[in-house]
Image 1 (cartoon, one colour):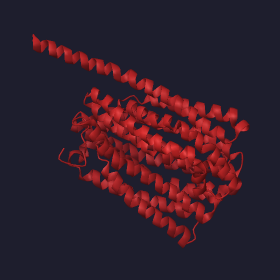
Image 2 (image 1 turned 120 degrees about the vertical axis):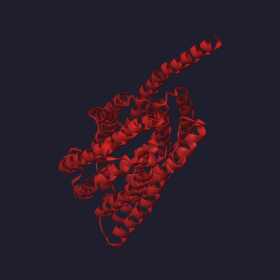
Image 3 (image 1 turned 180 degrees about the vertical axis):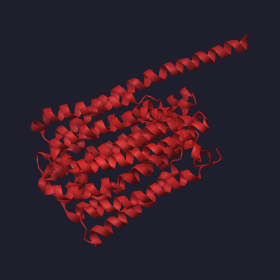
Image 4 (image 1 turned 135 degrees about the horizontal axis):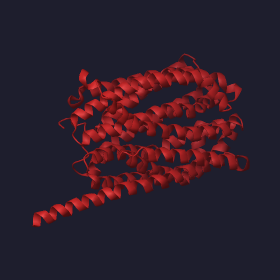
Length: 458
């Protein structure tokens, strides 16, 4: 534990550890959102609303594929954190080695299917023909370089599991500067189209992955040897058992978002453009609470592995407090300043009007998804990934039901209500599961404590 970047959540003050871990993690996630935000801003200002809509139209497909890999990485990270919390170093190394091996297979598989099925997927989304060429240009490059995104997600997940949130921050700072510089160079300097933004993204992801991988190789505790990669089948089964439900949760959620995108696209380019802008704001404003969820995952995983169940409840209070503060600040901005937000990204008056119908509704209800991130991560951290997966299915059903029933009646506002209903449904399921899993563990700890006390008194 001499490495100051690594945090052992099983000892010391929970609030102090979580805040210390959260701050670099928050800025890492914020920078990712900001450079994605500025990325599309440069595309929109440099190439126009159609190019902006083309890139935005790819977001649900990108979430489907990258979200799957991100879910796997987080699921693997939970087991790595549990091994670290339990101080089982040999098991820790085997699980990291298995994660690396499975990541290589995953990268090849996801890259292949995403490139092959991209045109058909865009048609299923009813992508407007005037956007199709740009969507394909952007998509082939982004999915062709998917290995870079997966390399970063896996390496960052390993570091977070060990309590290191500083290295991913350093990686993202470096890659963000490079990405934005290359965006400006390729689009404004060299006159490239959306492919310029895609190439800039791939190059920046190579940088961020390289920084994280170099850091992993420097940590003495997890220096891997050939025998660590000679895993028994049970290691891969454990990793998949925990990773796949997380991956499917993200993908199922993405399918619901794709159905919403399908309905939105059917109303024309103005709707597609407005919804793309609103989605960017949602991702940006969810960021503080989403980061609290990532902190909750690492904290819970380590303490669950160490059987320190009482500390998990303390961590929940800290992370929910962070999410509540985020809601009060950012939810207010969405409710009271929708037109200001819309005009930052959009030019057309029709697109701005549509965005102003969407943003305030989500601003009121975003507290549901803020709390959802924390509870869901806690359930995953305790090694119960199937429950969040089913909550993802519930999100999908609710999104599809609401958008199908109300899109013709209230337009783009139906998409906002679809998000709201999905968040609330998933929050109820995950918060209920969290307490049902944790409370028996706490009672078990209390019984052990009183038994030991009685024996000592005798």
